[in-house]
Image (cartoon, rainbow, N blue to C red; front, side, top):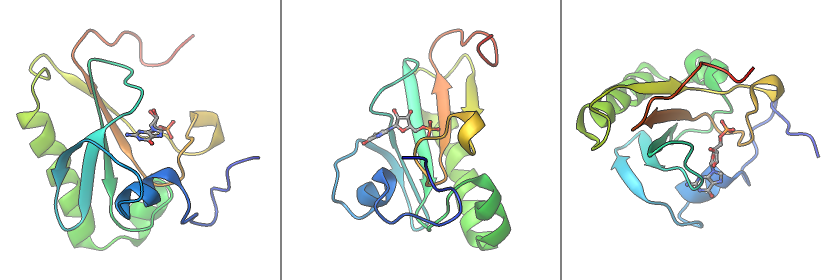
Length: 124
Ligand code: 5GP
């Protein structure tokens, strides 16, 4: 079934993680943000950063979230990138949005990838 990117789905995997219904390996948590290891890492370091609020993708997050949520999100990203082991030689941030991007979880998330040369920006 196609993913609905217009209405927030409270049964999406990250909503379940936020409710504690599914386990995760947390690397950062604060009032507004959770960051955890990707279950299928695409690089030696692969962290997902998500807001705790109900946002589908970057567009509704940046349009509708409070300043406090947005600041907390990006400060958390910077803190994680400062402090994670294996990220000293650089990192890549990716936020997929919608079908063409390959987004599969309809809760806004930022991928932090690092730990090896990451190659071209997109596959040919
Ligand atoms: P997207 O393609 O939506 O940008 O990325 C979704 C990411 O979520 C994928 O990299 C996938 O491996 C990850 N993922 C999917 N299900 C789970 C899960 O249950 N736990 C964790 N930690 N990551 C997941």
